[in-house]
Length: 253
Picture 1 (cartoon, rainbow, N blue to C red):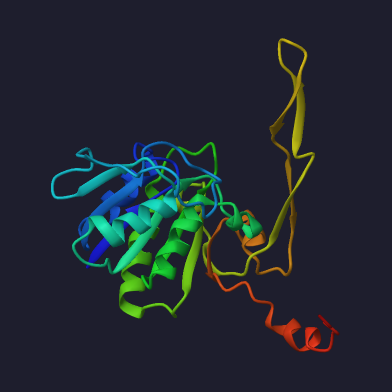
Picture 2 (tube, rainbow, N blue to C red):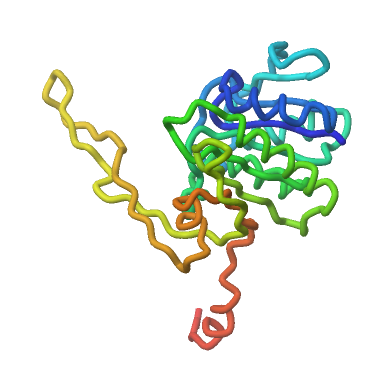
């Protein structure tokens, strides 16, 4: 099994090191990741400057790795279409520092890398440690290994990926695994208005998360109860239930 590993925290991040090490014994691991942190870049790709892939060797013997001056989506595209000799069997993105819950998946570089893999027809998962304070990735890495084996064995439906969040607690406090849907996460007071030394205003994106549960089984609710959440998502944003209604509108042109 050939496993492509990427992230959005950068190739030096402890999460990607833990992820690569966790799956090294169940497949041949190749790492293609951004040279620096590229969090919250969404599905951006680089079109107006060249991409450079620099080999690195800090992932251990037998693991080929490249550092790329681009986005997470760039890394997946470049890895699959240029750097690898054959298509990977699985793409794993992470382990992200911090959660990717609810509608945050729309901004996440971690999730977008997995989406890019799904677009290219490769089964994929985005894996996040749902804490900015936790420094122990061992529980998340342990689950990532189980997840990779399941994806390889059971496959995934076309155009589908798994968004996975692991609570930032010790193994003995994990209650189990829940298959969930996405909740809604909005932000209150998103911009902090400040002034520079010359008195000019500028704005710093911040804000407080406001979570909405569509139902008790959504990812935001389950993660708060220390369950690992696994949410199947896909990139077809079509609102199929509205098609018939829109066909009744009058679009005379």
